[in-house]
Image (cartoon, rainbow over all chains, first blue to last red; front, side, top):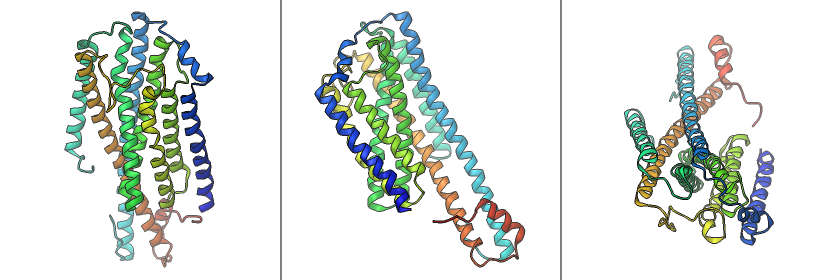
Length: 104
Length: 257
């Protein structure tokens, strides 16, 4: 188990140790890739066209939140049913064997 | 945190929904349109609160992970996991909304700007945290290692926050938090942004508690199955075949470990 855990963790920490300083140094040096930020400008501030972008922003945000809340709520319901089932099985076992299992 | 269940949870959700509706009314009816950026500037009232809650979430993950490393209590680990998942969701939405907003203003979806790059790094770090938890064999050692990653990852938060001040970037300056300069906003804009931040924070708390409950249920199921395994594969013989069979189906004996 230790090997299984150590290997991905080493890789992960190596990635973190590489990416974070590289990103910070690149940002500080304003190297070639950062020049892209300087050439962009306000090219399209047409109100009519921008409404589509605004709509997309609000749609993505609320769909994202509602989907997450829905998935989490459904998972909770499924788990509550599973817990009930497991407790029933345990109590059945308890009745048959006469051994008192600590049921939560 | 568990106190926010039952009727209180419903009241909280209802209050959040009302707050969100008020925020939407303010954004689309009350606040004036910004002169230079036009109507798309209203994205600010979603994009900034998303950035805010993703930073708060990362702070909660780091603090809870630190508490887990100190105390070893599973409750802290559950809070860290719940906050990490919610934070990654908020971070993902922040990056997407930022890209959509950038297109009409900067004419690109993405640019390797200091603020954007450090934010992307932070997002990858916490996705890595979730992946580590998902794919490492379950157990305290894996959770402790994930906690270390979470604490180390939080170092990126101040870098992200001050990136717009530290380096010359295309990203606007800070308008929220301790180093903020919100002089570019009118009072209506400032109030709307504040209400929006409160609404999103309320939503974050609701989602955090919801996810925390799911985690607690996962742990309860895991404990129940462990108890059943311990009971089944110890001295039991063939005196209870039917129930034992059904129990073995839900709690199979682990192959190794």
